[in-house]
Length: 261
Ligand code: PEP
Image (cartoon, rainbow, N blue to C red; front, top):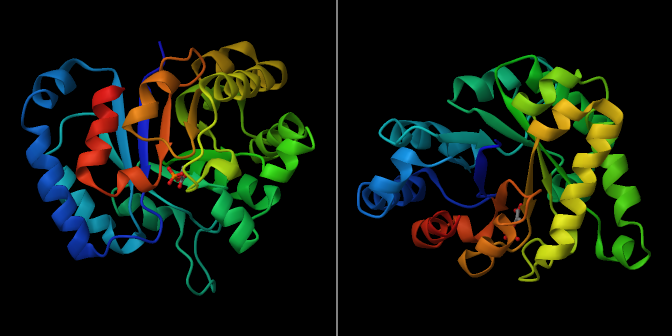
């Protein structure tokens, strides 16, 4: 049985002070019903991805969180150290208290030139540590309209996972399907469309890397997820959680998604 993962990507929002404020409210709500009772027995895992400068504050606040709450970083460099001004290594991310790291988010691909080759280097570098990559794939609106969705996500997935041993897939890698046209736009893929692509991604992994890895691989959906649409998406058999942007920035709206999942 795959464990559901709800992940909140804060992007370049939230100073350390704002992070502290977020967690004050968030942790207080987790101590109240319905969360207090529900979280103890739930199959739900929750991860927040603050900016690097907020990781220590967030890690400190999460020390009091129930089991299943963790942190992730939004990107990483693939080298262990060196003359890479402005970059952060996997070991640095690991030591900041993270369990996960996003790789190939569409904003990294489209605004910062992250290629499939770079995503693969990052995935492999993360897997050399205790960190778990969350590999993001997704088509642009133009690609969808040209009927290229499946070709694009297949390429991003297989290139991103190149040379990753099959036995690492189920446990240590998460895939997030994030159609670019749905990110930050208020447009969400329909439950059927999201399910179809998530199912496709799982079947590609099954064909190329073995049925066992595919069955245990977690595939998330991301793109304007909020409390109003999350329950329908999460009920689909191949959608194992959500990668949430805007709605993860406010404790209330993020908690509302957790409540629906
Ligand atoms: C994201 O940042 O990955 C994302 C899905 O953003 P939003 O939920 O705001 O569309």
